[in-house]
Amino acid sequence: MVEPLRRDRMVVPFTGGEAGVEPLTWGQQAIMLDMQASGSQFSMPGRMGLPEGITIEEAAARLSGLMGRHAALRARLRTDGAGHPSQEIARSGETSLDILTIPDDTDQAGLARYAVELFDTWPSTRFDFQRDWPLRMAVLRHRGACRYLVWVLSHLVADGAAHMLLLDELTGDRAIDSPRPQFYDVARSEQTPRLRQLSARTMRYWESQLRHIPVLTFGEPAQPPDAPGPAGPRYGHVRFRSRAAHLAMLAIAERTGTDASRVMLAVVATAIGRATGVHPLTLQVMINNRFRPGLADAIAVIAQNSVVTIDVTDTSIDEVVGQARSASLSAGLRAYYDPADLSEVIARLDAERGYPARVSCRLNDQRPMIRGAAREAGSGEVTKELISQRLPESSLAWLSPLENLHTQANIIVENLPGIVSLHMQVDLWCLTSEQAEALVRGVEEVAVEAAFDPAARTRVLSAAAQPG
Picture 1 (cartoon, one colour):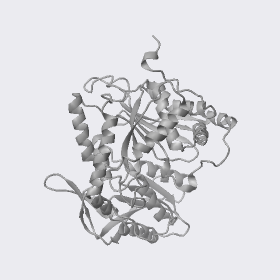
Picture 2: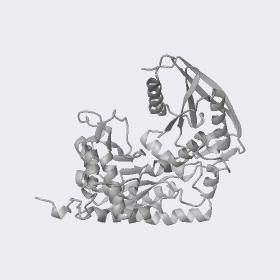
Picture 3: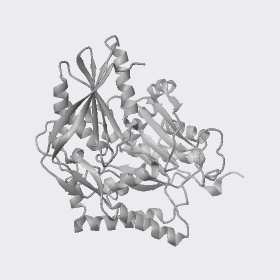
Picture 4: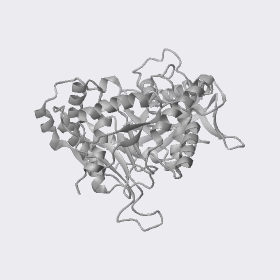
């Protein structure tokens, strides 16, 4: 295991153009609620190789430039006397650049492994939102040269799309030709009558989706919280990767005239129906909201959850794709709202039902955040033979246990090109490990079955049609 010879810290001053106290955006309020419920900060790591000849001073200048240009990176959390959160923007200040000197006898492979290890582990170091700046950055120096830049960005100030915009600035892939909208521009606009009315209208859709949901998506936990747990930890996460599923979904998308994200939603819903018997399925989906005017380039948390219901009962997979396309459109138009409005709707519905009910299955398809060069749809002909050749490459691995999970199943479609990479966090008191494995493997199974067969069935029966 490679360990740095030295760990130095360089003070980096910055100066920006704005200062003051501003409210949180709706997206920030929503992610803060998730952080409080889960105990996780969802910090976003990044890494990049540095061009030959770049100096520590030049790397520090990149960090200083980011801090100066973006108010979100100069903001720290504040709470007023009534406990309401806000953000205080500093006009200027100092941050730091960590400099990790790697031993000269480390080969290039070892250096790359250490960069990956830092990328994987540094996000576990928590931010103190009232004390820390929301961006950490380090340079890996090897044999006197700067080789890698690694950073961690707090999810409280940026979503995945904003992270990619910042990456474009760091790499120089996108010219900084005009100032981007700042988070306070977004937060202020959300207090206007027009957006207040939008949030209120959006709640009617949410109410229609939530009124008749079960207590929990996958039923009550098998054991109460105060009982001894089953063998092994309660919360786990599994990763399944399949190139065959990726190719199969491209074929389905081409035939049905839709995009891979809608196909993924349909295939996941079908796989859940097969593995668990839950249908119709209501689940939360993440919408980036950046199609809305003025939000495309904002360095802020814009993404929010919406909700969809998909019925996979005794129908064709192509018909489920059509459902997913329609449902995604409706959900996407109703994913921009004040979380306080949603809390009021949920509390009222719980009172009317006489019991609390929650959507406890989430799907977060991160692939739309891949930059254009990595998109592969239409990049070549997909054939049955090619899919079959890729099937043996599929892999499943259980990762280290989780300490906490604020939902029953959280399915993340990781943004890796050329492969379906599913990372599912699961409450094993609600879904067994066998069901979890059947679910993620079922995504490949369903996609391959339907790749060239428009009549392929979901094979999920209604309750009345169940045998016995």
